[in-house]
Length: 254
Image (cartoon, rainbow, N blue to C red; front, side):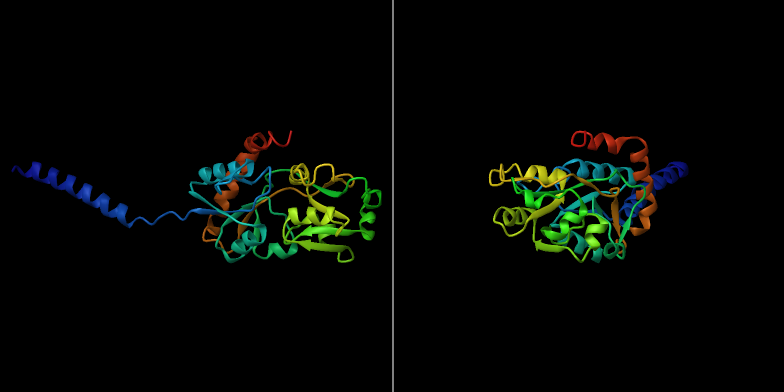
């Protein structure tokens, strides 16, 4: 074999086997693990356990922009918070801020959307449980969900009579069974739940909505991907500036 043909063949072999070895040694990309606590209509899980909804669409596109594969862990709110606190999940969306959460969650800037609305619900026709002002809450027994944050003044007010239930449905059942006077929850989810047969015509708004602060993505401070915070914030900034997130939310926030 002529020398130059031998050298050419050797170069090809080295290229093929060298690339294969490099590929075999390349470290796997750590997936971005999303802690996904259902919050219809923004965060929804179907009967097969598959997540969907505009918040899931936001996270899918954000991960793609950041060049990270996304996996989703569906969990109740308290379980999701525990995963984020331990670093077993990396990121969450639509989790309300609070002093107790800032120790283990980094609230990414900018906020991805404006304020959500919080509603109080009462038994239909129960004028004694109307909530026109914050002061009206002082005389009422209020159903709250374990682990949930609502708005700062309410969350930090230890003078209120708050009755804790494990979930929103339990709270509404306590309401119709006279065990609490009002129930607090995010308005969008509340409007869906009170349409269920067991609550229809039995539960109504207790008063005007309360606007909360902006909505954020949260990154676990113990995440294996915490070093990618700048990349995630850059992708988030691009999605907000381009109007992409606003368009994803528009079908349910018109």
